[in-house]
Image (cartoon, rainbow, N blue to C red; front, side, top):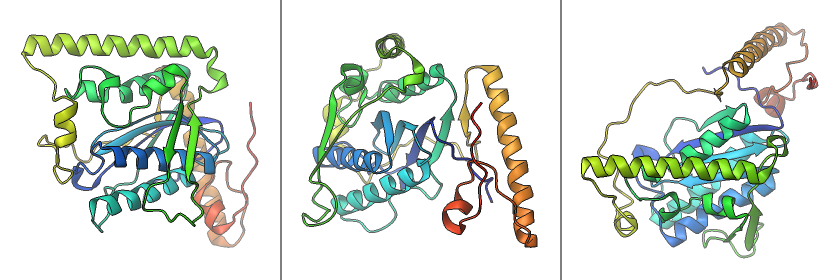
Length: 298
């Protein structure tokens, strides 16, 4: 059994989830791209999530968010459920869309950590030798909308009924959390780091004599296919990322304190003498209604 996850408000996360059998179920095409954006935006609006960036590769996605009020789990559940239904309907399939492992949600502690993950996700197609520039990716890569301050829009996929409760169209503007300071300076750093990655990959391809797959061939891939490369198994699944050593140490200490307090409250609950669970307790609060201590902000 995995350790309980502490879900707190006002936190940034990078969410990653992979398709079953590493299949290219998210292979870019107009219908799929629209469905991905629609489900992502609708879930973000429903659960008051601020979107920073998202890249949908052919068999996984990376999405960076700011969880304003502590609804990370509900957001992930709804987004992945709705998107899986749409993908299966489009592909004419019935089995599970996502890999059996749960989605990975890495908490990003500081400003530089968020920038690192946005750049990592935006340049994923470049580092994989698929396109020359991040904005060349033919699927969902919201980096241009982030840098330009452009609104994202999507229309309701055909899977959803016209007379249902899903809106006909959704729209959202990507946000930079206010605690990260000046928006323009933040975006300038993102733009500069992306340019460095693209330049480095160009040099690597030149030395190796390699080209990129290109937009046309990417779209021509079968969604039933999967990468030929080997995937690492039984690797660690981090829950937080921090470039700063001291921020990482502090976060790990807080996590250990949460786990200790959680286990103490759980034992008390099983004995029939319940005490409040620590702030950030999610599953037992949502599904069993246990009492949770209020969050104390420093």
